[in-house]
Length: 354
Image (tube, rainbow, N blue to C red; front, side):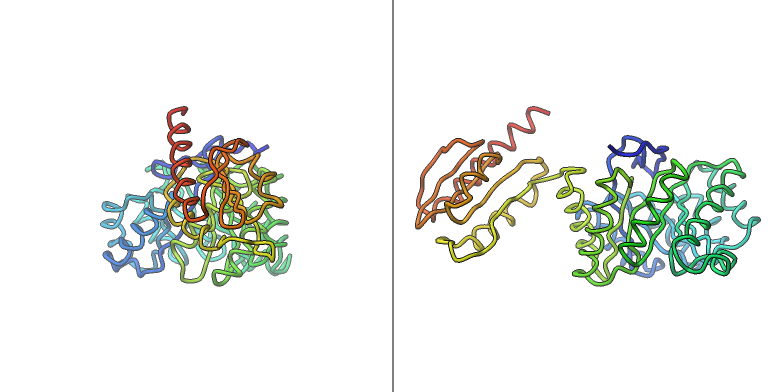
């Protein structure tokens, strides 16, 4: 059961409440490079991102972001550090502001940011990171989870004191245990929507493992309203992994759930080649169907019972099975093509039933 949270809006994307869990990423271009930043935003859009964040480090970045916003297919969150005046400049046209409490400044500066966001009715994300906690909390509580929680609590209550509640919160640690501990504890303290993520997660392999463990666990516990899988230097891969976490956790099915057996000595077919073709030709499918591609008879029929469409390979031939019923026995060379035809029929049925 997903926790009930306050709902906010980032452009045309709802976050929290009963809204779908949205997937975010961040451009790594210099924001004053308008063409380069738009190129990355478009890549994220076509990869399936819902929201994009852009860094604002200078007056030039702020100025160029206005033109980027006009052309962006995605809602834009401005990422603000150190200089609150950049937030005041971009609040006039962006869809949300992200501030880091550890470096944005004191109450007077945050009050000005709140005023600007209230005028436009755009939300603020309080982004607490383990590596940049306010000095007073770090000195009192160390640089662990307790300090992060105190920082988050102080800052969302400060915004409430300014009569502002269009808030999202992230509490990002660079390790799995800290991420789980922090979000679980904060969930008991407030009902604001959470942006999930593991910060500084590393390159693709390690970031995928850390994010799957941390974000997958939280989502299964009903925690989380929007998310980013942070990967060093990868844009489309962030979206791909995030969507896989949502899909494979069962929290938000989107696309095919492909079941295939591990390679072993019982294989009597070219299962690896078949799976590659099937994955390549079905990436576009959004219907949440279960398909099974099994390489031998030991588990094939059992797995196929729960699949919408399945292949059960044998020695030089195999079966096409739909919802537990055998619909064709074919040569191995004909199985994938027939499988794709049967799958296309199931996709059409699904779309007509919606």
